[in-house]
Every structure is written in C-alpha cells, then in structure tokens.
Image 1: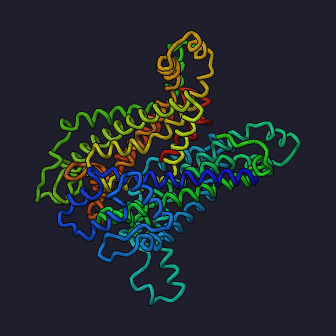
Image 2: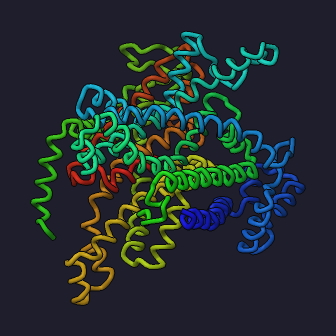
Image 3: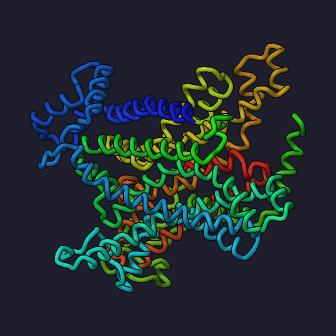
Length: 330
Length: 295
C-alpha cells in the first residue's frame, strides 16, 4: 500500500507541470501573441496594462524563458491581477468562488453514488424486468438530454409556472433579514434545481456502469460458490457480489470527475450561481485573460487532486493493492 | 486472420439487424442527415427573414414551430441549425479520430518510451475538465464554425488513442503480424496494411458515439454565446434566444431542445448497436468502459 501511494503521489508532479504547460500553450495560441490579440480587440489598450501583461508573462523574453517565468509565478500561487477595473488578485477572485462550486459538485457526487448503486444493482439482479427496462430508457434519455435544456425546462416548470422554487442566484435579496432556519431553506431552495440538473446526467452514466459491473460479477464462480454453500441471496448479492462490483465503479468515478466539474460552467451560468464556472464565462465575455488562465489551471489542479483521491480510495478498497500484492492493470 | 472479412460482415449484419433500437437509431440518423443536406429545399421560410408582424407567434399551420422574438420561423432555423450540428459532429470527430489513431498507433506499435510519453500525455489531457479547456482556448480565438470544429476535435481524441493503442498491443503479437515482419515488410506497411484494418472496429464505435458528444458540446458552447455566432442559426443559440422569452414562448425552448435530444439519442442507439454487433464480448470490456468517458 505504501508503495502504491508513493507511486501515485509521484505521478502527480509531472501532471501538475503538464497542466501549466498546456495552459501556457493555450495562451500562446492567440495569433500574434496575446498582446496583439488584445490590442486588435481593444485599440485603446493602455500602456500600463501592456506593461503589466508583458511583465506577468515575460512576453519580451524567449518562449522557453516565458514558460519558466510563468511556472515560477504559479508555483508561488501568483496568478497576476484581474483586468477588470477592480484589479484584484486573480487568486482571491477564484478562491471566493471555489466553495460554491466544490460544494455543489460534492453534493451531486454523493447523490449520484447513493442513488445509482441501488438502481444498478436492482436492474442487474432483475435483468430484463420492467424495472430494468425503465431504467435503461432513463439512461439513454439521460445521456441525450442537454443539461442546459433540462435546466431551462425545470426553470419554466418549477420557477415560472408553479412558482415553487427560485431560479437564479444563491440567496433571496432579503435573505439576511430572515430568521435562521428560513435562511437555510432559502439557500437549499436555490440549490435544488441546479443540483437536480447536475445529478441527472451523471446518474444515468453511473447506474449503467453499476449494472454492467454487477452483471459481470454475478456470473463469477465465487458468487456461485457463495450461493451453493447456502448463503441467503441478500448476502450473496449485498456482500460477495456488490463489493467486487463496486471496484471498477470507483475507477470510473475518478475518471468522470472532469466531466462533472466541467458541467459547472453551464449550470452555474444558467442559474446565475457565483461559482468558478460562471466566473470562467464572465471572464471570457470581459476578456479578463488572467482570470481565465488562473481559473483553468486551478480547476484542473483541483480535478487532478480529486482524481488522486479516487485512486487512493481504490487502493484502500481493493485488497490486492491494500496488501501490496499484484498490480492494478490499466 | 481467423475468419474472412466477408463472413465477418455477414455475422455483424445478422446481429445488428436483430437489434430493433439500433435500427431505429440508424434510420433516424439517416433521416436527420437528409434533413440537414436538404434544409434549403425543405425549410418553409427563410431562416433569417425578420417579420415584425410575426413576433413570438405560437405554432400554427403556417409556422409549425412558431416564430421567435424577431419573427423568424423556428422550424426553418431548427432545420438550418441541424446543418451546423452535423458538420461540427462529423468534422470534429474526424479530427479527433485522425489524431487519436496516429498517436494510439505510434504508442501501441513502437511501445517503450514512445508509448510512455504518449500515454502520459493522454492522462494529462484527461485531467482537464473539457468544457473549461474549450472555453479557455476559445477565449483566445475568434469564434467561427471552423474554430469550434478544430477545438472540439483536439480535446476529444484521447479515447480513440487509448482504444487504438490497446488493439495494437494485442495485434502486434499476433502471428500474421510477426510473420509479415519476419519476411521484411516495412513498419509502415505492417501498420497500415495489417494492423490498422484489424483495429478499426472499436474506432468506428468510438466515432459513432463521439458525434453526439460533439453535438452536445457545440450546442452548449453556442448556448453560452461562444460557439457559432448569430445570425447563423444553431440549436444552441435558438435556445439562448428562447431563454429570454421562456415564460411566454415555450416553443422556442422545447423544439430545438427536442431536436438535440432526438439526434443524440439516435446516434447513441446506433453506436451501441454497432458495438454490440461487432463483438458481443466488447459489451463489458475496454470499449464499453472507455467510450463513455468522453462526455
């Protein structure tokens, strides 16, 4: 286990450097360099901003030096200042947006796992039953539904038509004057629709994986053995089969995190939630490049660590790795 | 090779034809392609013609899907929008497939350090939340349909690379490959003549399932105003227009959304059908697992 953890941790270092490198390549994509691009867009760019940019990215130096320069700044968590009139540090702007995005994604993840696992197990143990067929339809429709469209439909239904739920922001304007419990309900009611939308697509995927994984496992010899020695079916499925079926799902969980986090962009934009996704879109509209780049780097690093966490969790649940025998095949 | 190509095709078709959902998916996909190609003929009205007398009129016999806030015919705009979706889907998946096959083949055939470098690069690209990366790239480029195609393609090749590499790793050791190498066939010939044709099956599946993913991606970008720009009609930007009048004009939201849903659903059914028919074993293995992660 110790070796496994060490290997995973060492793999993080090149990936961290890689993230900064790809992000750097993205900046260099701008035709004629970022300065020309900015100037074409905004002819009266002030010399002050230009000087700031040149300094931030070391634009007057050769490209390799530029990258090194940028990497060193990022290593010190210096992402520069926003181009907006407030000129605040990029890091501060991103940090204040982070908790909302992380909280929403975490809640979605918890709901997805706790609903998808039972659905997957039930449809696998009753393959071709009515329940299985209904969930299969749900899965295909779930895969095909654009999240922003679902968001619009839910807003129209629960917000405009029924008037049950608020459709934008995180808090009511007068929230601070409400009693404590009403304030909590206010926050929750604002989060219900965004979380429902974020959960929907992921739920479809995970219940499908769970079903497939379970179908594979129940055919294995050790499950037959467990049945043959007279264990009740609940124990066979709930203990022997489920534990093994969950293993590949943990990997899938880690691998699908980028997709889940990427979904924040659309959901936060539609529901006007002040998170990192909305910040990304707003910064692009405002051509606030330091924030765009800082956000890309930070969101990717967060995803990397979430992935690492899922990997370590896998090591923890898989006895072959926990006991240090056998290697996980990729 | 264990079986002739012709027999394989027959076996494939037999299994595929038994899958009713896949056939339906295939037929709908074909119809949608015809709609997109013939949009100029089929569209009842000019998709960009404003008419102040027809602002936000509900669906009627003249305008089956109603009209938008500028009095434009929504049905015609949805039809023209399908051209954008289709073009983006096909071209971006074409780009992704090309890049993925080249890198996957290089990694799988060469092995050793080439494999290590390419696969670490794949891991790296998979760390980025794709939508954030797309947005960051688009922030620095002028949005146009070509930019969108290239950017979606270049952020979506990783699953193809993994699949092709996996196929190459097994095929490389097979007798017919070792044999042709031993009689002095060049590496290029071995790769393109002997290995690649046998590795195409999972790539075909990845392509069929990649198109709907690209379509969803494009409509999302257009919805945010960062994709194909108005007045060009796309499903995404019709929905953006519809958002502002959601409470009074449901037709602007419901129809383009349904168009996306039906399109993506049909491609997915077709893709899964092809996958199951190509090799029933693939259902639960590599392809099945890896393919879904592109989302």
